[in-house]
Length: 197
Image (tube, rainbow, N blue to C red; front, top):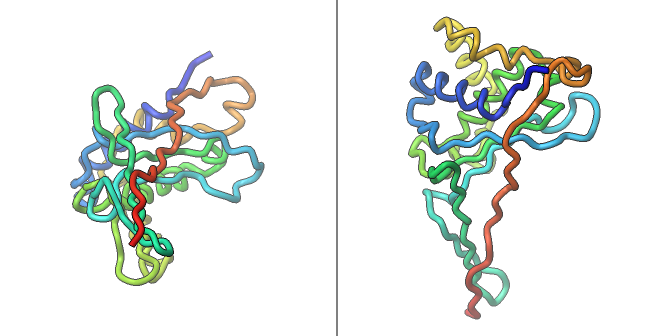
């Protein structure tokens, strides 16, 4: 039975996307890691993928905030993979991700990559206003992503890079292909200091 390393396949796709799309050209793919997590609910509703920035705002490893009479300081743990200091962890939810169409899978990957800060400092791209992750209009954000997908496809990318996005859930469920990939627990900020103020 053939095996597909989905983490490796998405790494290759990420490198090509960042090479072909100037809007993603600030990304260093060596510091982006793709992992898999199991989605247990049926259907296509729910999260297909998520990005975890591994630094606080402006790329800081530590962040302090007031809670009641205390000032608490949290530190993000460093994530290393093959000697690389990872700044972003993108997790695909399988098999829910496999239930998407080819175009939906591609836009999902681009969507997550577009969240990466233009400073590439471990933080996310921040828009003005309360909805800093997607900006004031989710529809406008999605239009940007759709345009990027169309631009990318117009560059005639290698079909081998796109082939994993054509994989369907039934291919895996019916045993025509074995799915593998990295399983990386979501790093969580740890409380490192707490002082009374």
